Image (tube, rainbow, N blue to C red):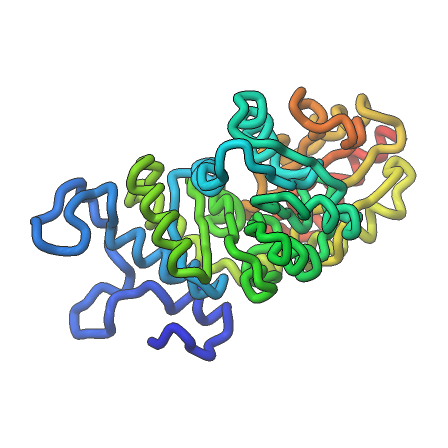
Length: 356
């Protein structure tokens, strides 16, 4: 199947990364449990490659429109990309972003490795100005957990004019709803733990790029640093990917309907929903105590810090001391799953009614 296949993303998710259709061949790529390979080929050693990784990377690369490298976790992927920034160089990043990314940036700045300028990603003019002396511009859209939207194309053009690379964390949108490489972005990062794997049972990260030279550099860093995925984890992620389009469609439909209903409930002071995806954020009208109580009063909704699985989870983000103080104390981030929407609403409204 050619790399420029005209197949729709849902078909790619199901059909790519499989063995050749030959008699008695397995339909799925097997799990290759090997640390050592016979010399003389392209792999040589388990840190440099694995057929199960390759199958997964084929699917993810084609969905995002580039070449993919998988990693042991989303943070391992983030760390590998940030490792490419020169000592003392400047990174522009959203003030609201994945907490692990913000913490990595703060740690690198505290150790003098790089300079960081945090920006309001919705203020495009301010972000463009910040690009002037940057080496790297890191974007999230929607942001975590504020669900703000960035003008990716405009910021990317300005960053490139200033000589900076652009990275987009596409975890929330997935390549089904947004393909930043098509907007000229240099690198896309995913916590594949979330929607891509989709079943809350694996840690996995991924990096995609359309630049062959950049791919080679990132591959070299992964080989050297050893932040590689396990074969079983890669196989689980690949299996989860087969239903990505179904899960995202259902979660998005549920999220849209819940956002509408939540906006009409008196216990909810604010609803944040960007119009797409499966993440909704609400700010409880009665403050952080009400938000904490909500996360403990439901039966279907699970109080948990991760997201993107088939089950619905939520949490008050400011319970984490490292969450930015510009995030409202009473904000609850909701990862909407694929359950029946009326069941999800019934569980929520019973809890919300006790807070009104």
